[in-house]
Image 1 (cartoon, helix red, strand yellow):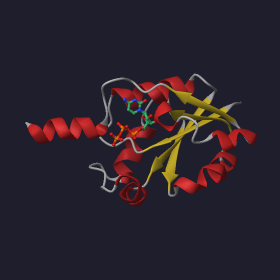
Image 2 (cartoon, rainbow, N blue to C red):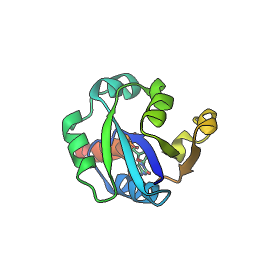
Image 3 (cartoon, rainbow, N blue to C red):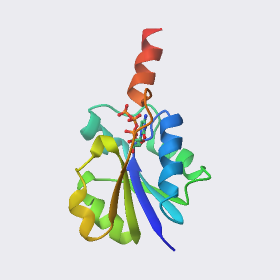
Length: 130
Ligand code: CTP
């Protein structure tokens, strides 16, 4: 059984999110997703997500492509999470290309192309401007 792990905020769930999870799943048998907490996001993106962490976790857990989701509390704990969840492959969007190559000693690190022309930030901006 090959476990794949990936991480993200997945706020205002959109097509790009669905696609990366489906493609991540193709790299193994089980897909495990670290959903970043509201606090982590405040640090990372300097804003609170619109959807609360329990709502984002619930949505991710309800997807056909996802076998299990958990809270990612810290960006620095990727190594611990990979070991804890016995992941063979780490999938990240290519906005992170090269950033996680140091984890190559414990798993395969794969960067997948982002779906063009869509992001949570852009969706929020479009709604704000209308
Ligand atoms: N992702 C993707 N294609 C997109 C948007 C996101 O493949 N168009 C992927 C990211 O690479 C990441 C995961 O979805 O692996 C979660 O990304 P997240 O940062 O939560 O979504 P964004 O839409 O990029 O959010 P934001 O605009 O707030 O940065």
